[in-house]
Image (cartoon, rainbow, N blue to C red):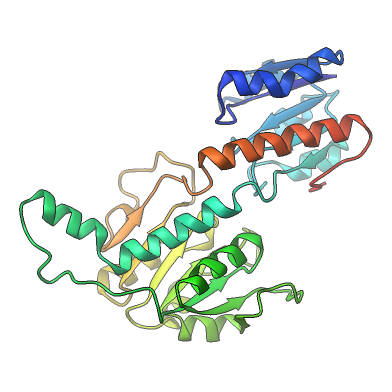
Length: 315
């Protein structure tokens, strides 16, 4: 079979060769390219591929439908909203993801943002560089705060565990409670979580129910002076409504790693100019350890598929 990797997996060429070598030795063709979002370039590269590998680069229906031999799309990412699943369904193409590779990495970034906001790290760093003092910028401890986890899946629960270790009270919300959630997490309605939490951390997937879940109305249900962390998906939050709440002082701060589109962002994006907002260009998933973990998962997906058993099934 022909296997085509359309973008970097964030690992060295040496490590990539280690993963691809057994496939080549087994008689398969393996090609890899640098990221190019032009559909025509993508079609040229994958039109005869049996397996396409991507990370978070958009893969359109136009490209999928042009690949007559395509059998599997192997996504080196947890979310797959950047893949046209309807086109894959129409073409009978299987889709697998890399669920679990970045659980620790994302949870740590969420915690990092909480601590940085509470202790005014961006502001005191600037003060120090300017030869000034901390006066007026003494922050608060995370211990004793109530943290609300919206989306108590693997990443949400790991974030909850880290917060619990810091001495936080933890509330959780998910649409389908399974009983596998941590015992210390109090499962409540979304409205109750928003109204009780000092910090709200988002960890839900993007779908019709969660799009703009955080909007002007739900923000008004949050505690005045609360913080919002989003390491989930950008469209879960109405960015303008959040910026308005931050600039008015209703919310104390926000940590945002994801946006409506992948960075680089328009320089006029409202959250680039809102008060007390830490912004990062979608880096929560990316650690040296998580990149190795996802490479291991996606190549194992391929090996299993070639042996007749699909893993990490999306379609």
